[in-house]
Each structure stands twice: as structure tokens, then as C-alpha cells.
Image 1 (cartoon, rainbow, N blue to C red):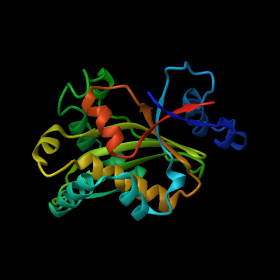
Image 2 (cartoon, one colour):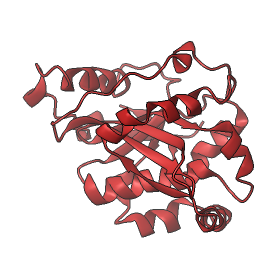
Image 3 (cartoon, rainbow, N blue to C red):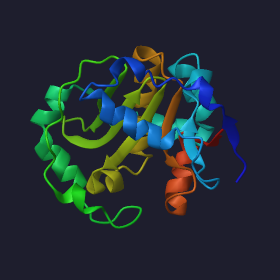
Image 4 (cartoon, rainbow, N blue to C red):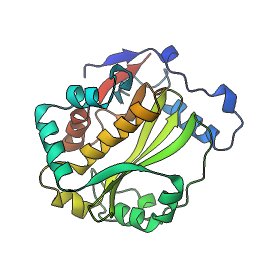
Length: 226
């Protein structure tokens, strides 16, 4: 797989100021497991170099092809909305979150058992450099039907859950709810978290062909850390 290189010295996790903080340290540790020049050669990360886009419009026009842009607009016309949730709102709507997680037991493979456990509350975080954020997709009636969880760590943002409710994913015939939700995440990061340079979603070649095609569709690129 052809890939570009990211020099590790350009990624600032802003870890020194929060090294003993109980909420920051787990996020820093998680990120360092990926932002690690000693990863095996076949660990090609799926990365969106968000710093190359001036704003959300530039991302929309440069990262999405014509077909994806058309489908994006059709999904929006169906009344779905996309926005970040506060930690308080996320914690108060865990029944809907659980319904999304358990809407199927097979996605790009068999679901991890942890998804079938009722979600725990997320702790409130106050650090501007190390925190979680959840982005949600909602029906025209306000029902929560899809989400992306992101761990922010300095200049690096790791997406670690990307899930939609099976019924609504299948019912959305004009495009992909999760592409529109991904765009909302990118728009929010560009607008409200301009220090972030890279958005990351696991490895480029992991998952079935459909998932690998989806990664390319939303602008993710194969990157190897040096």
C-alpha cells in the first residue's frame, strides 16, 4: 500500500502539562500507543491531515468526490441533523446510545461484547487539550441514531467509535448517515479546535472492503509514522 510519512516531531500531544491528571493521562497513554514510531511496518494508519483544509467548505469540496457530495445533500434533505453532544446530554441519553450499540451483533465483523453492556457515564473534563467528544446523528424527530466518539490529544484526534443504528442505516437509501456525521465532526474540529492537525481512524487496511472504501470516501489516507 502506498502511503505518505508523518514526522513524529510535528505531532504535539501536549502531555507535559497534564502528566499527573487523572482524566488527561488515559487519553495521552491511548494516543501514544498509536503515535509511536516503533509500530510495525505493516501498521499503516488511516489519517485525515485536517491541517491542509482552510475550512469546512474546503474539506467538503476537496475530500469528497462528486457522488459523495450529491448523496450528502440528499441525506440532509431527508431531515437528519448532525451535531456534537455535551457530556451531560450524552450521559442523559444512554438508553438511545445502548439501542444504537445493540441494534445488530454483526457489523464489519462480530461486535465486541463490551457494546452489549449498558454504557457508563462519561466523566466531565475541563482540560482544553485532552478530552472526549461525542458527535451525534438525529432523525427529524430528534431520535439519536448514530455517533462518533473522539479522543482529543493535543494536535491529534482519535475516532474510536463510529456506529449507526442498523435500522436507520438501512433505511437511508440516498446516501450514508455516517458520511454526513463525519463531515459534522470535521466541521466542528476546524471551527472550534483549530490546534488539531490530524484526525485518525485505526488502520487503513483493517475491515472488510466496504469499510476500507468508506475510509477513503471520507478523506482518510494511509500514513506511516517515522
